[in-house]
Figure 1 (spheres, rainbow, N blue to C red):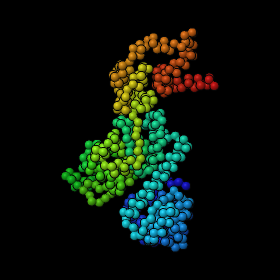
Figure 2 (figure 1 turned 180 degrees about the vertical axis):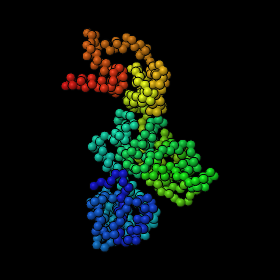
Figure 3 (figure 1 turned 45 degrees about the vertical axis):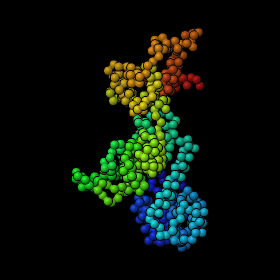
Figure 4 (figure 1 turned 45 degrees about the horizontal axis):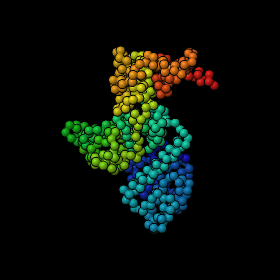
Length: 474
């Protein structure tokens, strides 16, 4: 039996004292842990476990009918993946040692201080969450499962490194822990955040906030909102973005630029799940999942004292780094095809033709602005093509690409290179077609769309020729 992915963690409280069960449950509910089940008779624990697998069991040792230590031994034997916190009035050291030997996660002596109790529960839940993610990741890798295509549909790639990131995010998406996304400007960090939200099965909204340049007051007002009269001009109360993202995902972009005072407030939100609207002294709870992104090296900003280490370690419970476009040049043909079609559609024009040299031009360029820059380049080139400027000329200007004399002279050079291995006879039409298709696919990195454009035919027509060729060779 597995725990339900995306559901709040189920906590089972086992104690024969109704008043203690009530107070322990109340403490957890106030801390935002509402998926609770209380049991006042240890004999009913295992029938319940046969139907429901919890994320944590808090167990009393001294109960009638069945001893708590016997329950602990059986739970750790039959459900070793479920952490058990023993909470009892028994103070004997030997009993505590025996419980830890039998696999208890923690041993708490009644009466337990509230902060100690909550700290133990949260650590146990984090451990359980990590175990579940490790299991899911292992199963995904062993099964060779492909990433969820619909969730990542907006990210155009055939890169192995990118697909590995997809698989990892699919596993951690259901976790409530923060995700830190790093990568250069323009690599698509918000697209990845949207994909995580889609995979998380959260029912709330995806809310994005760019925190760069916000001072502490504006940051607090934007995220946490304010009470009426909190400051001059606050004529009515306003909820912040964190409330809007309730039950969903809050994406904070450019987190490396957040000022120190705001970092403290964000840290409290992550640690306690609480925040204070401006002008209020009553804490509000948040169940929004936090995803942050930055194009900075946070290790460097921590060394300089501009970013808190405790906040960093909270944020990087899960972390990915998106590779820049220059490290995945095989994606250029796919992205080019997508952006050309997108631009042509937005301009209500036919897809423009382009020279084969265009891909030589793109492969030499470093793309400092990554995918965002590439999209703007292609859209502008398509727009200029509508006004009579060839796409190759437009791309050369943008990339600074200067062709070699051999590349400039296409009139005979291409033909000679095409025919140089046919010295002894002229090729047949079928041979020439196969040679052209092979060359077009080579220049477009194996992508059929750009290859078809080079050949002056539709993608469907090229696919039919390739299918026919494969059938003839069998």
